[in-house]
Image 1: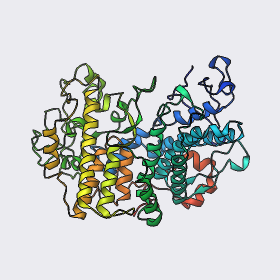
Image 2: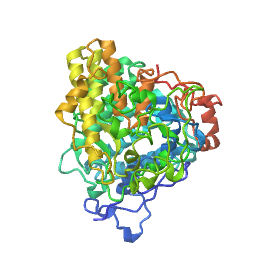
Image 3: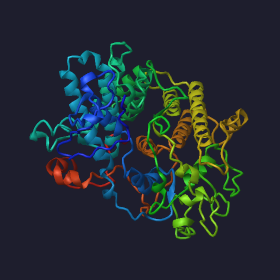
Image 4: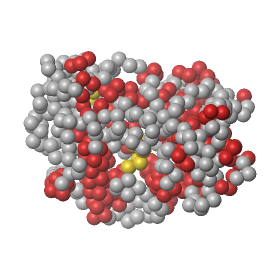
Length: 535
């Protein structure tokens, strides 16, 4: 059985949006799946699905958006100097990745509908719907309004070469509806056709697919609360009655499970990134500014960050002033993120004043690309019980249970990942935190849950924000949907993250779809434009 690798890349003209990929698994598809050796250039069902699956790998350029702008805006980290990059040079990363996948999904639907075995392909169709719904939601929370209903149809008619835009509300509503369809239609019936080894996302585990789709419904229903509370509450109420991720579930792409998948994030932190631990995150993890780290109460702090070159825990101010000491700006082999540290961890002669992200965290190529975690679902449940929404009565005691469950799950995940790293040598964490360590963290003044709802809600947002450190775009969405109730300080207007509420549309969209782009933007697109879902 030949398996199509998820890491495969798709490069297609934006106007046509159709993919021709070599075929894959032969077991269940017979003639639909012809072998690699036959050099088949016909887009078939298995190949089209694989085109969508391969697009789930975070596209190139997203790391630059993350380290140059998003980390500053959501205040998960800080930059000691302004980036040398331009946002519009990287703004096409999500855009181009999404629209080739969307085209594959439209063609996939068409082929399944026309197939005599269509009734036995419901699971394949549901998997594709879930992936596209997830990608649609990511895209709209990055850009806002976007071509959606008419997009990805350029191969059917020239009428769709310049697709009309849909509002963010329409994209969110339609995507959540697709997730519901998938949850309701996934089947364990033995007659359902399997993609076999080609199903590289959840390896044909229908239980995981249902959990994934339903958990996404819950996540994104929470973003609707301030704009469409009746719809949001209905979705939340129903989602809570169906399977959701458990605390130990952490869904994403794992290099150990996907052949030849390498997730190399090292380049995100070198060059023009200038990333350091910021004062906002530091103040959320340590009770004091003691440079020896004695005030640290968050067990993840020493996994995400490390001391400066002098061994001191010194964060870079999120809002620096003219009196803030400058960073020495080490580069090359003296940079704290230099690959040289794999063989020579202590850099002789290097001198950097502020604590960087942990070198091993930035260098490990086996850490997963997470889609959604069990800890996030626990925090969302804590928020629901704190507020009393989705038909659930407010209950501080239950909110506390889910709050502590979320923290515990996040800490355990990062201990497990860091301990399992083959490159992590210095200060390697244990396989899991001890019960004594967890109790101490949960009872510390910076973490212990406050039963007063307003105070408890701030704590829920804080801990969910920290748990999303490895998912900074989700942390950005959380900050924006809560009107920056996550830990934050007022940023100066000179900050790279000042009032970054969206990513600008790529130049290719302006060039190729100008009239529709102008209709939605008025001819001016800026990252300071607030998106519809924001308060």
